[in-house]
Length: 193
Image 1: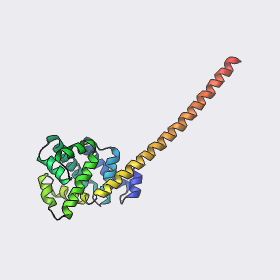
Image 2: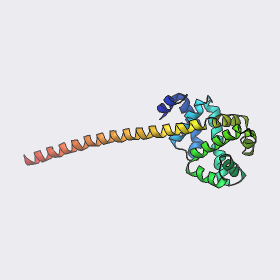
Image 3: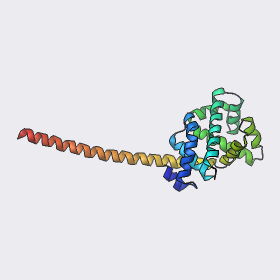
Image 4: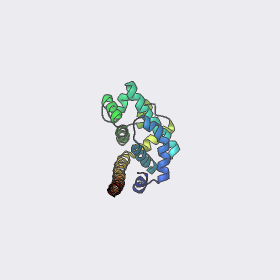
C-alpha cells in the first residue's frame, strides 16, 4: 500500500511512513485502519508538510473530534456545522468512519475559506487555534480531495494485495494437498506389498 501511494502521490515511501508513525497513536484510538492512516499520511506528505509538525497537529485534531463526540457539547455542534450536518450526525459518522468524518470537516473548512468567512474563528471555537495546528489544518483542508483519492488507492491496493495473498495460499494448499495424496498413495502401496 505504501509503495502504491508513493507512486501515485507527491510523497515518497519514507515520508509516508514517518507521517504514519506520528499519526498512528491517535488514529488507532479513533478507529482509523492502517490503510486509512497511510492514506492520510500520503495526502499530508504531498502537501509539503513535515511529519513531526503535521503528525502531532492531525493527531490533535482527531483527539479533539473524539472528545467532542464523547462530550456531545458545543464543539460537536461546531464540527457538525463545519461538516455540513448536525452534531449528532457528525458524531454518528465519526464513530462509524472517522476518516470520512475528517474529510468532511476538512472540506467544510475549505468551503468556509472559499466563501470568505473566517476559518480562524472556527478553529478558535474548536480550541484548535495554536499556530502549528492552525497551519496544518488550513493546508490539510486544501488537500481533502487528495485524502479521499488516497483512501481509494489504499483500499484498492490492499484488496489487490489480499487477493495475491489468497492466490499464494491457495497454491500452497494445493501443493500440500497434492503431497498428502502422494503420501497416502505410497502408504497404500506399502501396505499392499
